[in-house]
Amino acid sequence: MKKSVLFLINGLGIEKSGSYSIAIDQCMPKLSRVKETSFFTTAVIDSLEYRSAYEQFFLGNTYKKELKFIREKILGETLSSNPVYQRFYQDVTSSPTSKLHVFLEPSNERIVEEVNDLVKILTLDEKKQVYLHLLVSQQTINEYQKLIEIVNYIKYHLDTRITVGFMLGKELISDDVSKEQMDSIRKLFFFCSAERWSDTEKKLTSLRDENVRPCLMPGFCTTNSCTIQDGDVILFFNTKRTTYDKFIYIIEENKEWAFKTTESKLPFYSMIQLDTKYQIPCFAPSIDYENSLSNLLEKANKKALIITSEANMSLVNFLANGLVYENNPRIQFMRNDLDFFSNLSNVQSVIEHPEYELIIFDYHMDTSKTINDLKEQLQRIDVVLGNIASVCENKHSLLITSLYGLKKEMPLAPYNPEMVTLNYERQIPIFFFDYSYPRTKYALSGGETNDILFTALRFIWDNNELYSLVHEKGLVNNFIKIFKGN
Image 1 (cartoon, rainbow, N blue to C red):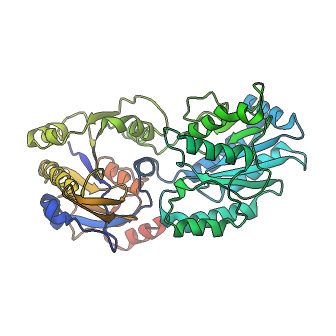
Image 2: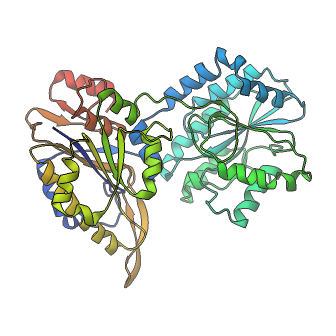
Image 3: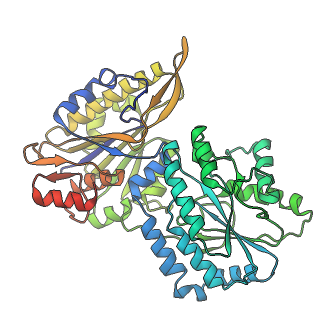
């Protein structure tokens, strides 16, 4: 049985100008030899961290489907019969002086149309104050220009009854909220005590110049009077299951202190069910992502084995199942262990296991120590890669790539504290090796990381609806490539 094997060295990318070179070919001689006989291309990716990269890998760009779901299934004809919406409507309209606070991640400018539609459906009094607060989740400095375009579009296409209130980085608050973080955010939320920038483009540009990542953006106000007050209503206008627990925690922990009462009313709602420990009523439980790995495996009648760290298994399972927590028998997990897979017979027993047709090896470049430590780790990974290539040679399809490129300042060695910067932002390599695809007849095109997963599935499942990076040379296929946009 032919298998499809994906070997991910996450964090690895194409070195940018000015990056310290760790000489990948010297550290990873087996990868270097595979490169000599493989197809090669690159992909552009913005992610600098695991979650967003893996979400793109498993689900692709989901925004169009999510907006369509919100427009048709939530804001459409069924809204009038939605009991949660009825409660939300009563809370919003019960007091003429209360405000509606809408929290939104600005990932796409078109979301403003759905926000406007909600306000129109509510048929609010013209004096009703509605504030749109932007939680910025973009990871890299490179994304500021696109973020500026999105924010400008939102500001100038908002319904006249809606005002942009405050903006802050979604990851600004750490898991263990410090006193300084608590004080800063509660002052912003309850008193608008923060910098005020009506010219958001100027502020975002200054943050970019200061090298502050968008997701860590300090909070600032764009207008006055956008404070959260007793009796207001909070709506998370989310397009997918996500978590806002850090923000909910700060609001819940400080509302009695801010309102000077233990009898405050501050109801929370969300569009899609949140991934949260709090009881937040939602308009819809979830979205069915038809092209999730679990759904595709079901259609193909195939099974996958994902080899990753124990710490990441829950997240990978959540994403692979289309943002749903479930134990799917078609997706099994195994803990990655460099020592175990350094043994060729162990690698062979895993890849040749008759139960799985798709095998994903998920490794991460560990940048927690020094450059020398990183080189030693890559040498160990290279041994595993050599074993995988040996098992796959003349038998299975092998894709070697990464899902995100890191950017990190690190010391050279324990005995040499000189700091250098590794910069693999934006561009990742894709190597493809399969004896049944001769270079004279086939070519490898660039694409998105979700296309890498689709390509791996195409090797074991003949489904023309899935785009493949590997294509036959010729006029017809070039047209397909142009249509795809890669």
